[in-house]
Length: 332
Image (cartoon, rainbow, N blue to C red; front, top):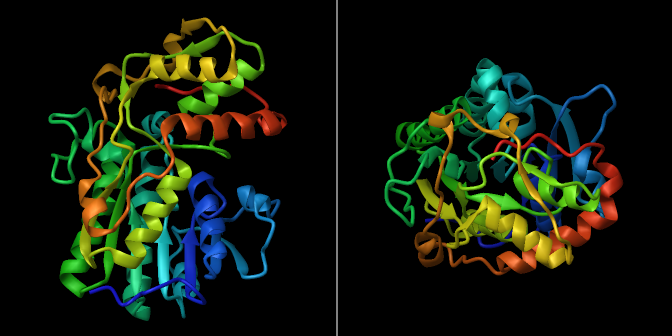
């Protein structure tokens, strides 16, 4: 059974905290009264990324480091009640060029977290998986027991990290829950993802250049995803149980671009850019998640609709377009 009843005054570590999802999660945790240590990848300018957007930092401590360093991770985990492990290399196209980096960060980094949690007897560890581990759907909607298919080096390392979490749970009794977000989108997202790529191109008055527009995705607004993480911490089974955090809806890339244009009141021309295509056997053609297990066991379901999430995201990008200097190179 999970012994964590609420987050108030809990000491929480968030890895990868400067990033898109993790910065929103950090903000939500602070709002719920947690004392958050944000682990941010070391950089020469001491930038804290999207954590700059958080106005109330009273209960926020920031550590600069690297999840690949076991000594630093061991120090960061000391006296922590709950770990939300989100640090990862996530860009699929870059994983084709630099697979070793993905192994070191996504797999070895996760093992470092698990070893430190074992040493310090951490009360709860939330590991972040990804819907990419399913590959192109064999059966839909995708349940947690769907076969795992490594269609990119990125997905291979995430499958391995999930299995490492299961191994540590079975071998050492670590209290682990694995959350498997589908295609999260929202404010602060990088231009590696398709929705920010479409919005920023539209705001800059450009024709929309995309790769293949036929793949189907289960897009879930970032606040839905963060609420799923927190529900997993409070209610998730500790035996490395896996929970899909999905919207349960599917949209093609082309349909998504058209909906964004409709919300913006713009008439946009979509142009195919072959440079944005994934290799044919690496492309995941359909993702549609089944979140019924999370609803039953975590008490979670998506609160924000796709259109509401898109509207909030477009509004944010309109106010923050100056933070994005180019139109990205998304490979759909």
